[in-house]
Length: 334
Image 1 (cartoon, rainbow, N blue to C red):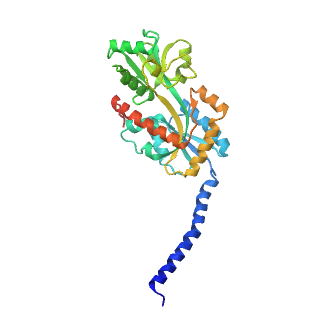
Image 2 (image 1 turned 180 degrees about the horizontal axis):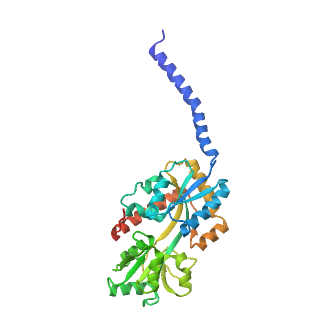
Image 3 (image 1 turned 180 degrees about the vertical axis):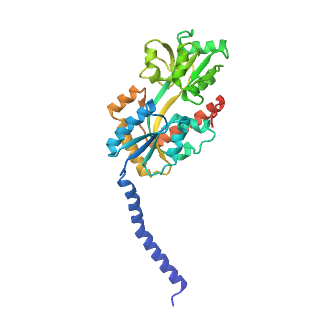
């Protein structure tokens, strides 16, 4: 009769052989999960209604990815609740590469601090695929306001604390938080007036009922060009190609002021790394195309090529940046 030790050695040898034999099969299983990707249409969830600039950008990218991947990329607009409805739908989808999220600064970096009852944490619920593009806001004032640059506006606000107002598309919007950051860095007391959308705020700006507002360059460039409003500064680190004569706010007396709004692709957490890398590679090809750059420029945006790690780093950086701004503003939503 063999000893227990002899039997034990035999079992261990048998297990080792089985494990060695199974390893290639496991690797083949992983490869088969990604080698044929994509084998069916991909859904791209967009956090805003059809027809807006975010939707236009998503459709542009989706169209080119569809051509390159050989499968339809179907845009699924899920507007409402500041993008939280779309965020939750995307984060809870199967992490198989067939659902993507057209993420934004608001949905990924601002909403976690703004909404108290989000069902998912955007910072933990997604894998970054890659940034798509960035744009900036521009600070505009009505022609009736007796200022011609940022310094004069800040001086006027200090002379009349609590009397100047700035409009926005609503609490927690990028133009609201642009104003809150401006207020904080300039050390001035200006009053926030929230509206239901930028269009309503701009109407009151033209009528002189509010003193200033931050709005997207793409929305304001035509009015600035025709002299309907005065542009005092853009919010990004460099001048806007669409408004080359308008200085940055950072160069106008507030060093370090930077509000850059970005858009990108994210996938539900746990999406196979090979799929993420494939999507990023195709995205880089898309962003390198001259016609894509031209169409992004028409939307007031610039392409943001980079790796998934670059995009993940940017998301985390901006979430850390905006959390104290949201807290200081007192803006909270359910």
